[in-house]
Length: 282
Ligand SMILES: NC(=O)c1ccc[n+]([C@@H]2O[C@H](COP(=O)([O-])OP(=O)(O)OC[C@H]3O[C@@H](n4cnc5c(N)ncnc54)[C@H](O)[C@@H]3O)[C@@H](O)[C@H]2O)c1
Image (cartoon, rainbow, N blue to C red; front, side):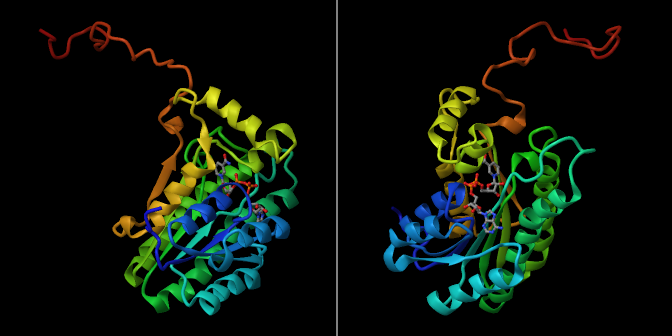
């Protein structure tokens, strides 16, 4: 523990599980007091109980404006301030071919992944503007950066969130508020376990699979990797960083995979233009 969030108060949506839970743990370790906002009451309450006075669980559905407003107000009423909001709650949502996705599934997915983040930004800004400082983070995804990595609606919402982050950042920086997002690659969490194995508690099996498929030898993504990114952006270490998308993916978006495949990786004669009439090589 280095006290990088000493005295700060954070609101973390989706804080009862996965990346949110890891962020709650790290933020408290680093000196923050945290509102854990989630739908999973049992998990959220058990997690908060581990931290005594430093954490409170609040039932929040991020799609409901009154729930988000209430969680923000609770931070101020109980802890006196709100220094950081991490809009992290999410689902995989609608899956399938573009011509088969029911519009209700589209609406449900977008309501959590985009409306929920919009509401988190809106109500955090409401109190952070009065304070004259704050850090708003959101959880995007590598799926929001390149095609083919996630389902369509998820991908669209995660890309939209990057645009929203940049735009809101351009407004709020004048109020001393930084707005950034994180784009994780595949991370072993209950969400991924539930999607792959059907059992959200089977995180260990996913972790083993991610270890063997990672560009970094035997090192797949862990929730703590994202918590560290959130810690950086929430802390004063990132005091000059706003509008940024911090990619945490072991290089997947650079084209890396667990097997080196580039034909350009080994040295070969200089490759020139057809006809070789350009600049001489010797
Ligand atoms: N795990 C990954 O590989 C990965 C990669 C990229 C991005 N993400 C993003 O990370 C975030 C966290 O995902 P995770 O992998 O930790 O999943 P998770 O399922 O372990 O945790 C998500 C949490 O969000 C909560 N939640 C869902 N809907 C909610 C709602 N309407 N209101 C309040 N809380 C709600 C859930 O109850 C759960 O506790 C999501 O936004 C996800 O899209 C995850």
